[in-house]
Length: 312
Image (cartoon, rainbow, N blue to C red; front, side, top):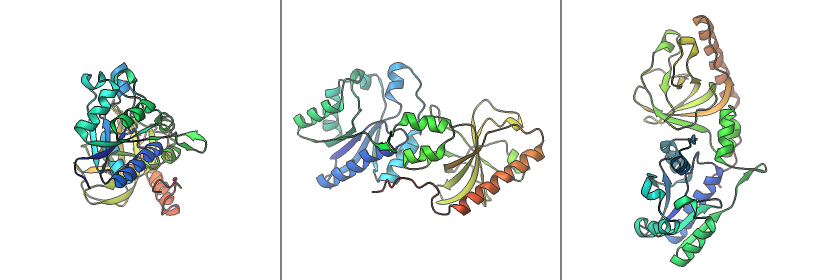
């Protein structure tokens, strides 16, 4: 394999959904044909947020985007650029030449609606023409649909805000995830006999519908995973919080996970978050949630979602 030469997929890859998956699979295929490395060049923040000052909630953090691209599609060479003023004002054709001279691009892969360069003046068609001029390969991926509906980050955000994580997972091609290290909490769950781990969504990352979810917690250090009851919200039964927290009760696990990195995968929305006036009521509800979670995994021991086969 030729060192320092790359076929590069371009885009923000928010959520790493099925449409992105087609780009990544084609990038790997073209890189193998040319005997070079497949790579991704993305950005640490959404360019449209920087240009317009408009907050665009991300489906997943840069950490999760990188993990998904590596784990699901086998792309190890990931370059995250900081979308600063220099990059923002770079003409589109200068950007393409920069990819060739500084990143060793011998091929570029992008989506049909990819816009880049100053004021988004670069288009997929212009990219194709410039690559032809520079003598490098270029592949443009058409719109990807699922059940007649376009796969898009916008649609996935809508589904997650509605708590429809199964449908969102079908568009993603994987379960929606949150990866974070375990933080110090109030340890209130221990007094209920249901100890929890505490995590948070990174700044700028979309927070799904508040409530309780059937989930699975992957302990990255050990590689072990456990069924989990996960609550997203502000803990109204114990005084409430300003910041949204993610608390997971791992079923069948005992031990200390403080400081460890955990990946939570969301399977199913169970119920809305609610305030309990009595501690016993809260304890009983958590136990019912745990029973439903175990029953769910007993019914679906392999994969309860019937995702499209993104591996093909």
